Length: 146
Image (cartoon, rainbow, N blue to C red; front, side, top):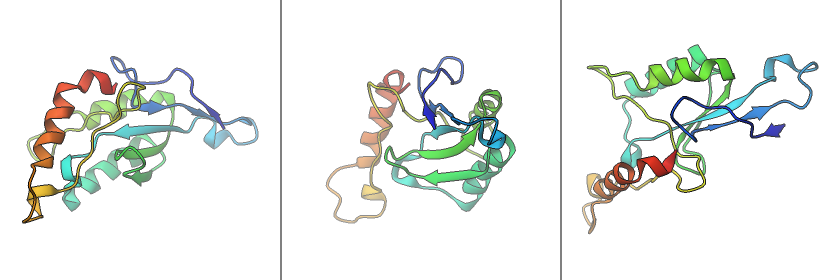
């Protein structure tokens, strides 16, 4: 695999990790196999409906392979082509009444995606609101993530 290369979505300097096959003629189905980082919700709270929605988006625009909460805490979509990145991001970030929108996760050199435990949402002994702290850090430093 060749790592890197200039791939991404407009306005973002990170969130997509370019991957190219060293032998594209021998393995044309993985000529491009980019990894796409999607920002996870604080505390990793999902409903099965949201998980199905995310998987449906990636099944449409990519390989369908996912890695939930890799080393960055992000949802990682594995195996996208350069051509599929913008349409996938448009669908992820679309405003819906019945579904949250998602942003790209951080893959920049300045800051990675903040992550936290469920804190006061599940722990009766929590002394600090980790969910609020993660949200505040994400909002205040969003430009540094990308």
